[in-house]
Length: 386
Image (cartoon, rainbow, N blue to C red; front, side, top):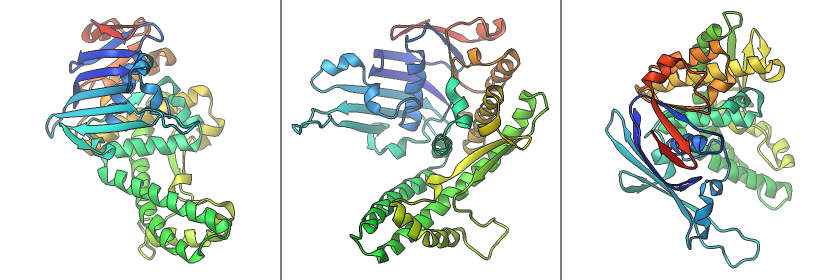
């Protein structure tokens, strides 16, 4: 799998970009704030329909486009993949501001696949990517929501069924929370909770089971990688802590959905008092243990970075296992954050990929033979040239 062509219009600091990408390692060099990370973000957005850097898509529109009657940004990518080529198009349109005072203009997202209008969910899996960022250390040291999001984005790229189950779960969660708030204010019938409990258990149990499967696979690969990165001094374990524990596959007496339903029913009084669902996949946690020590709580910065790196390299193997194709690898100035040993391991690990895009402010950390084999690009103020 590789991205053959990328077209950007009014995206970040790229007013207009038409770029053919070769099947090899691509080194993109440039000073800070010239557009290196924006390039990787655009490719990641094509694959996942979301930015890894900002929560609001409003920030993705080129500032100069704001002067236009209807500001917009467009990302188009031509992908070569085993099932056949695919063209992905995403357009962000900022509509005129409503007359209501204090109301912001609405941003509309439009998606097309091979020229046909689609939903965002239909684009997932057309282009698979793994993104390395300097701030990946937050996957270990940051809040649980980051780890849940990481799992969801990874799984949605390779498992369409999981993405549908997650989408259904999130819709049910919104409805159940809305009912809980009304019940707290004594404005609705408590009997309605039974239906939403059943729906939440149905979709939630599927989400948790798939996440647990992924964690088991990632743990096996990450532990092996981590041993090499740590000089064989640490053993890494990944643990999925479910807020509603499900029975193991070895226990046929209780179905996972029944176990989750029973737990939701037991927590009803607490949930009504809080006005929110206090347990479920949206409250689950992933922990990283090195020699039994929780790296998120007690690991040094160096240890946390090594764990994050092992996880991302394991993700590459996981996606290849699930899809039969190595994903496109995106590395944002990671060599500046790694020592020589870890940096060399990363470069060796990504060499097997069909396409790798690496950004750098300085090429000095890269071995001469690695640079000679790569396509070298220069980015300056939203323009990319060989």
